[in-house]
Image 1 (tube, one colour):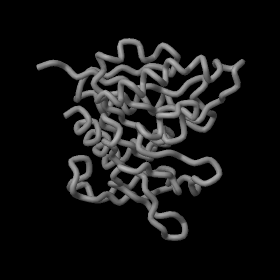
Image 2: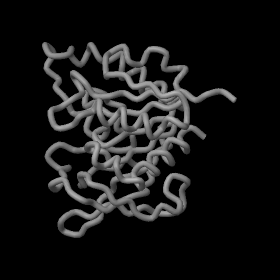
Image 3: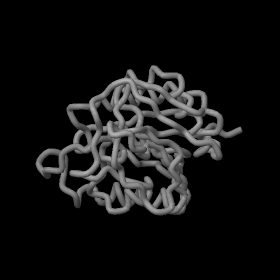
Length: 222
C-alpha cells in the first residue's frame, strides 16, 4: 500500500500575521494527521509547492499577511505559486483549508473558488475568542455522527460561501444567527474542505476538533 503524502503550508512572511502562530498550529495538525500518511510542514515560501504532483493532500494554514512588495515580493512574484496551486487543485487535487485559509491569498484570483468561500474584509468578523460550540450536520462522511464540536476558539461570522459548496457546520453569532464555518467543495474540479476552527493551540485540545480534522483529511484522501 502506497503511503499518502500530506503537505502542510504554514503561514510566514507574506502570509503570516501577529495574531496567529501558524508554525505551532501547523505542527499540532501534523500530529493529528500523522497516522494518515507521511506529513511534512513547510513555511509559505514561493518554492513551497515544488514536487506538488506527488502530494495527496495539501493543508493550507496561512494568514492575511502583508502585500507590500519590499517585504516578501510583489503580487507578480507570487503569480507562479498561485497558478500552480489552482491548476493542481482544479485537476483533482485535495485541499484542506484551516481557519485563516479563508483570509489568505488575496492575490490569488482562483483561491476562493478552490476553497469554496472567503472572508470578506469589512463584512466578515468574529466575536472575542472563548469557549465556542459548532453544530455539524449528518449526511456526509466528514460529519456523520459527530453532532457537536466544543472548543476554545474564534467564531468566524459572515463568511461568504461560494456557489456549489456544501455547508456542513455552523456556529451562532452573538445575535443568535447561524453562521457557516465548515463546508466541502467539489465544484472546482477537485475536493476541498474548509474549517474555520483552529485559532491557536487551545482549539486543538478538543478531541471533537481533532476528530473533525481526521475525518476531513480521510475523506479528502479517499
